[in-house]
Image (cartoon, rainbow, N blue to C red; front, side, top):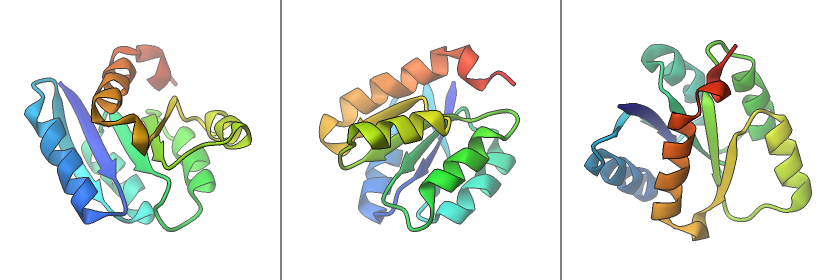
Length: 126
């Protein structure tokens, strides 16, 4: 079973993601927050396999991603945003993000990427 933390700024979206992920046999949401500063503690307390992170959270997301990518075990990072230009894509990928997905790509595309992350054991190697 793949454990997931959902970090999203909007309560309704966060709850929808939690509900939808909870309907899948292979996913279990082990934490949720609307605050970027809560993410390290949630990761520490849950050892989640995947972190789904909304770029709209208040705070310095790029710095937070760099910090998260230095953690051991390294979390598998999936970033959700409105839209990404090429420069942003490069920055986030260099900061340790495995996948970027636009909110407009839809929930099914998000589920596919979470499954890809869960199957990719190399993304969490030290």
